[in-house]
Image 1: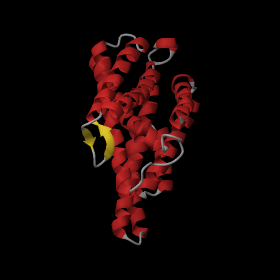
Image 2 (image 1 turned 60 degrees about the horizontal axis):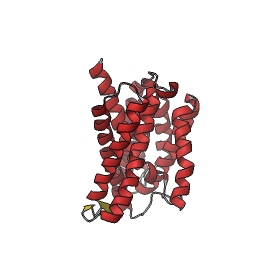
Image 3 (image 1 turned 90 degrees about the vertical axis):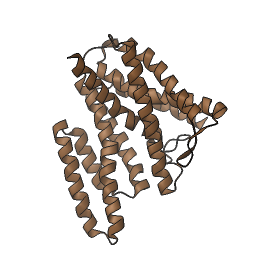
Length: 266
């Protein structure tokens, strides 16, 4: 029940923010979600949180050609932070976790902004195609998670990664992929005119696979830290990172494939 109630709150917020909110408000929403995700990541990995917030927010607002420079400067700053550590072995690990987390969390959310801004051709309801691509990148794994949950619970017999996430099965993973692809085959041609069926299917499969890998990657982080959930912010879901781990992998993949498709067409 808690899981369903949380979804009833989050889904309308996501739909409005992605499809209808003005760009300044969307930037604020992205920054908030990114900070919440990084906060939980920093707690899991013991990475310094404040430098990550500063570097990550700068990456979100910086032009793309400057974002890589900010990440490089973050790496240099992280190495300097290690000089003040009482335990240099732990300090090095925390410094590495800081840089990885900034790239992982804020880099992924940066691609959501790029999807919004770089792909502005009109689509359904006079909303830019970039907004629909982003909506797709978020929902494709949420839909897939639902299919994986019900099929995996009833038919899951072959464990996918028992040491990382004992509850996941290959049957559930297959159900996630099928439901994600079905959603993409319906949503993308309907909202973005001229999207070939095979393109919709291929990108849906790639985004879903990326999301499932992202889910496992976050589970591995939690296993290493000895925690069950990344946080308690979302009743029935755990933390913000637990809810968005698949999206953090799917958004960059969708952005990359859409830009590649645009270059091939051009």
